[in-house]
Length: 429
Image 1 (cartoon, helix red, strand yellow):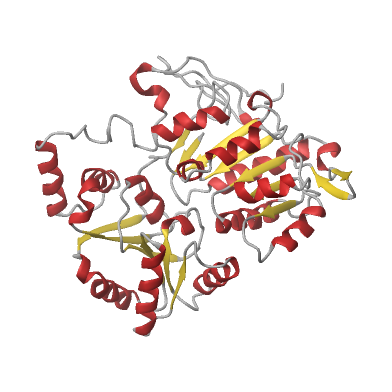
Image 2 (image 1 turned 135 degrees about the vertical axis):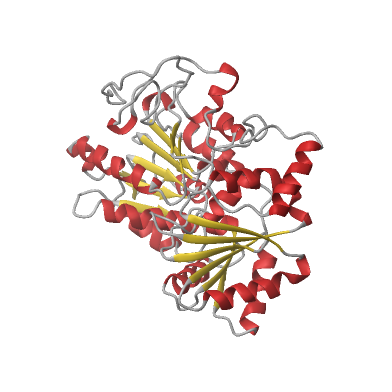
């Protein structure tokens, strides 16, 4: 279970070891595993990468092709929608060592007898917290438990995200070895200091006017990503901005896949430098050169705030995040203040006062505590209240471990003294 700040390279962190491990497994693994099944070719991938959205799956697929360039390793992509289904199946039949898919479409194709998971030794869940939180758990469970995939004791299972709340960690344990590694890189669950965060008080009826002021100040030369809470809200705001002569596109779940891809391409190239999006549609997307993220509607969960503003300030670049706050957002005032302070950002006096009032009124559970670890997405819940087992486990993908931390499969209990790093064993030994 791996946690790292947004924009820190989590996709490369699992794709590079996947490619390397498949190559090291030898010719049998590299050779396309194709078995005739009822006149159809059935693929047996060595690695399966699951993600929550079509856009993120496509992004991972494109990156996998880069990392596997000039190797015999092939990748295939499966995601929902009717537009590209035949093309997806055609490419799948050409061979597949690494399969990137959304859970629903994967199950559909497996039911047709086109994919077998008997030889799948590597399972990756990207944006795992979002997948489990969005209700994909039954589909994921069906994939890993009822389709002859090697059990968790015999495969490498890796989960990646910028946040892992405790309740999601508890759910995720069903898919991991007992002594798995919780790997946290940087101040996980917090935000990068490369992102300048501005929290401004804006009443609901003033949001459009304030947004246009920000867009005018930013100019057309920079990419601006605007987050709203609902699909209807995204469409309405994009329509309004277009009527005001702004070059804007939108992305949300009601758009057809080709429309979403077209809009993302217009945004990436700067043809339409403003993208209005729902959080689900834009989760995990890596869009270079996004200079400004605007939370037109703040989320009700501070972990989602971390993911949203992480669309800027990526890979060491500097970005700006502006969030509209009003009475509707009081429920995240305390946690939002914690994030601002942790990232050494300027804290508005009114937000500090509001958080102080909530402390004095009771129910505040400590600086950075976030409900005694209930919601903070960057701590191994097994370390809370002295829980967990001692000792470290094997490092996954040929990685190293140190006192049970590092790699992808190891332990977790609280160690009294740090242990010297030991060479890892291969997961299958």
